[in-house]
Length: 155
Image (tube, rainbow, N blue to C red):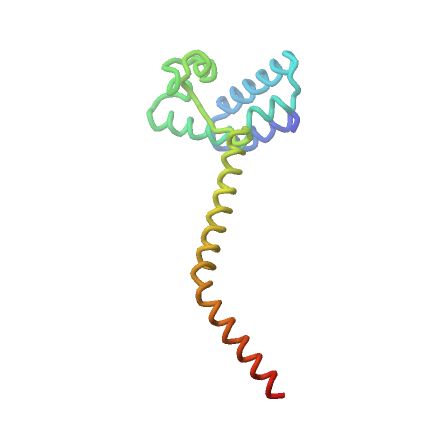
């Protein structure tokens, strides 16, 4: 995804959900952040991938805006105590908006682990059922074999 596509998706998701100044501040922040990282030598698509899904970021921004409205503070004051940019506070003090980036390797490893766990649980249940039925299948097979043998002798 290009920087323009990322910013457009972010803008589209935020439009109508938060005030225009919040949209513009966040668009400006992500535009500057991506440009700065590219100037440092990172590839644009890698920077965008590390940021995460713009819809998830927009959801976080919308929740922050709702929380700020509920507390009677402005969007920035609710996270920083002042009108400084919320992202600056996050870098400086560790407070601010947080989101889970599901594209990280450890989330993928967790999903793979869950998939393996489901596989082994299913296999355990099926082998348990089979082991319960096995004592019944032996005598049933023996009876069927004897019937087949006697029917063959009658012909």
